[in-house]
Structure formats: structure tokens, C-alpha cells
Length: 457
Image 1 (cartoon, rainbow, N blue to C red):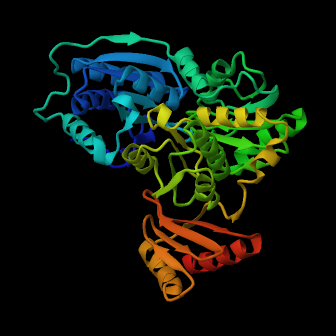
Image 2 (cartoon, rainbow, N blue to C red):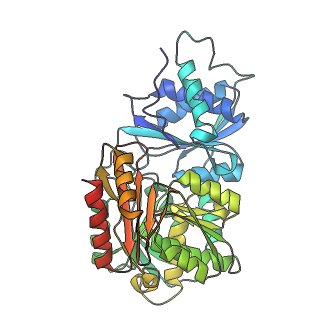
Image 3 (cartoon, rainbow, N blue to C red):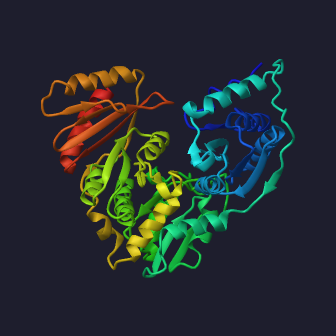
């Protein structure tokens, strides 16, 4: 019987428990299917530090090679290092990682040549169908046939990746900085030492040992509990700032010299200013609809054109390509750069923060204060059986009001002169996600609690 992949093939990637939901034989079929759907003669493959990653990567590579495709394995890497390889080599790529998920999970992030994303609408559905068909023992189709077996070779791209990033942000003239980096036992422990080498930075490493069992804390800095160790260490060291990377090191979170988290919207605004300056004070900057009002305001103030999108990297990357945008940022600390094949790289955003901080004398808290203009709720999740019914109830409550506007770009956004909120359903769980923002804390709290009462009624 054909494998049921409905639980592991998501909107943008493959992800599930190993070996319960998928294993090396299935990975081999994914490699063959990826080769067929892309039609490529060569691909590049990398993996994170999870115990299951090397075996899955080798199986995927065998499947692709059996279809006549030459496979370049770059070994241990961050997801943005894989995107670098896909862009620099102009090859489709596969990254084996489950990002911030617990140790028993693994997955595959796929891209076409030039790091263009592969999702359900851009090839992932076809890949899933082929794997399901080939996993059926009675199927006529043969996943292992190709014109001639491809080769599998190993190449190290870490130094080239680091050189590319450092060519985009000049840190040679900054004042010396002390930076604490929490790699969470993930791939930041592999990439940071090479990227930071020789720069005027005193690096204080935290959990740099590659360990896919995550013995210290989850490699998910979006959860405040996973920032606690970094915050303590920044204060204890008297450091200028702290950086926290997720498991596959494509997202970067920042804390200031006091150990206080700096919101990804603030980082988006800061980097947008620098990217606009690099491009002569003009250019398009993408932001999703739940980033702070401060982002489009800052972009306009610095000569740029802000463009608002749905939440999700596929929408950001598609709009980056369509509009020729120079930069894009999300509330989840994904940062996208035209000079990085429109792909996301937390490391490049981190270098921008270091360059901005080291290019002036004040502390990070003062530097970012001008971009931190509003009071935000952060994302609040509520378990809801009838998502559509609860959103309809919110629409009924706010729709008749003359002082608000409603839009449905992604879920429901309600905006007034002094506040806004967005409620959108999760694609994978029975959750509604609320984000609210206002000009002051009191107003934000009132609106947040008002909407939550309707959601949780």
C-alpha cells in the first residue's frame, strides 16, 4: 500500500517523526521524486546536527543519483548556508532539518536553483504524489530508473558562505563589541565562528556544541523561556548585545545590553534603513501584515516603498521576486535579502545589527528606540474548534463600527486610528492566532482582551 504522506508533507516543507512517520527508504524516494520534478542534472544537499540527518541525507542523495542526477553534498550546514550553495552554484537544493522542532523530528526544505522556494503550489504536491505512488509495492512506476547513475561528491561551502555575507556588510571599521551568541546546540555553533572570524568582536559562545538532542533548551528563540540563559549571560558579561539562533540557524533573535529582547519588527526597521541607504535611498521593502506599524512608517521616512503581504515565507519570497524588493522582514525573525537570492538569512541580519551598533557610540537600546514606537501583544494562540465561526463573530462585532476598517488579506485585520489587530487561523492546528498593537499599552491591553473574550467565548 502506498505511504500516507498527509501528516508529513506540509505547505512549505516535509516534516515528521523519524522513524515513526518517515525513514530512510522514504527519503530515498523523495530524492528520486525531487530529481524528476525539478528536471535538474545536478542538485546540492545539506543537513543539520540531528542524529537522523546524515542517514536521511545519504538516502535522499542515492535516490536522486539513481535518476541520473549529480549530487553535491555540503554536509553540516545552516539552512541559509544551503540557500547560499543553491544560489552560488545555481542548483536546486535540499536541506535536512526540522528547524526548532524536538529531537525526534526531521524534515526537508526544498528549493529550485537560485534558492527559489518549493511549496505545495510549486512542486511539493507533485513530489508527494510520486513518492506515494512509488512507495506502493504494486505500482508499475520505478523510482530507480535514470539515464545513467549520477555521482555523489562532497564540497565544503562554509568559508565561501561566510565571505559572501561579509562582502555584503562591512564590519572592519566598527568599534570593538562583546557579543554573546546562544546557538541552542544548533547550526549557529557551526557557522558563527567562521562568519565572525577576524572581526572586531569578542565572542562569548553559549551552547555551541552540535547536539540534535537539545540538552540545554529548545532551539526556538520565539519562546521567551529559551532566551533566559542568553539574557542572564549578556548581563553577567556586560556584553553589548546577545544573539540567539534557532536549530537550523536561519532565524536570529536579538537582545540588547540590558538583556531585553528587541522585537523582530524593530530589527526589520533597522535593517530596512541600512538596505535603503545601500540602494541610494530608494527601493521596495516587504513586511507581513502582523509586523509593527513602525516598519512601513520607517520605510517611507527613508525613501522606500513598503509592501504588505500575508504571513509565510512563500508569500514574502514571491512578492520579493515580483516587486524586485531589496529586503523583507517578518515578525518571526525571518529576514530576506535581494542580495541573497531573495532567501532568508538571520546571519546577514545579525551582521547588519552589529555594523549599525558598532558604527556609533551609544548602546543598542538607544539605537533601536526610534523604531520601537508602539505597544504590541505578541502572538497569542487560542485553541478553537470553530475557527470560521469565531472570526465571523469578530467581524460581526467590529464590522458595523464607522471608526474601523476591515480587510481579509490573511485572516481578519481590523484597524482604527490608534490600534489594529489581526486574527488568523493556523494551517495545521485548531488554533486562532491574535496579534494586536496600539499607540499605548493601556489601549493595546483593552483591545487584546476585548478580542480574546470573543475568540474564547
